[in-house]
Image (tube, rainbow, N blue to C red; front, side, top):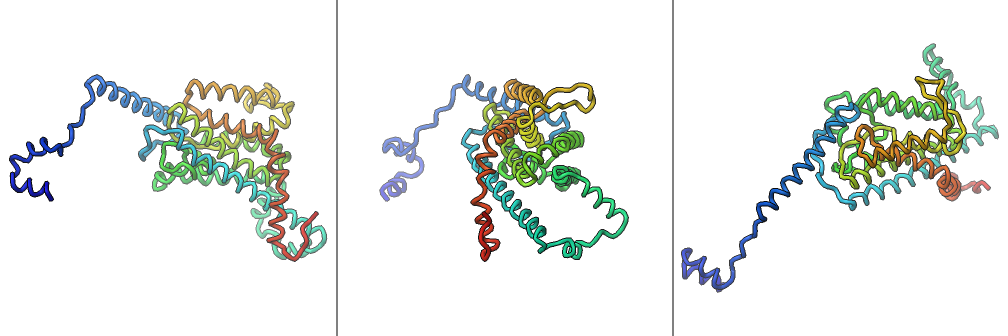
Length: 358
């Protein structure tokens, strides 16, 4: 009230002098020295040029699409907390779901063995396929191994996502949710979806060929239920490793593809069967052991991370391989072999009248 009264009495001409006398006027903001402004501008331009160069290299490779949305310029390590929690939660849900899936498969098998769901009953639910082409497809499917059946589904899902990349209306959605980038607004869901995403057909074909080659061995080691849970977990963990490397080196850009999850499968198989003989598809006369192969591949990926090679996401490859090695050495015993409480709880929920299996 006093201030308003004084302003009205003195008028606008004397207002400035009154503010100076009474101390109401804020001190003027100090401007940065010219040399400091110039240095800050050079640093910002350098970061922008570096980010643009990284993005341009990815686009030239044909593996990564061109971004059409804004991303963060700087990212701190605190931004990794949310993806870290998501990776733990998603991995847990994957193995819980795999345990329930295995319980249901064992339940169906047991009922068939004791004659509750015999062939006579099943043939009336699933009659023979009508038509020559349907019978041929069914014959082809029945001749596949368990590993090849699981991988066929994965290949089909990857093919569907690849087809979505060809639709112009889906480009923005695909860039946001089917590419993993720690500097993007969406960081958790793309950790899963980008594992099934390929922008280049060559990238898609090579990854699926390698996955098909190791599918039978991997599923023979783990079983189809555990393999599925591990594959999803390896994909998420590889993206988490990619996020950490991007934040640590401040190198941002979109990543996509099943390479991280496939490296997890490769690390798992090579750890379990290190003496197995492998060969290059175009040079079948060149053979080497699986143990030597995984060491060389991981060495190249480690060099790629440290030296900043940009053609592949080497951090994701390295994270996936380490995930596979760790799971084969320790994770299988600590996680999968302790799934009995989950199966008992599901049995109690599924068949409350029957006693749990011993």
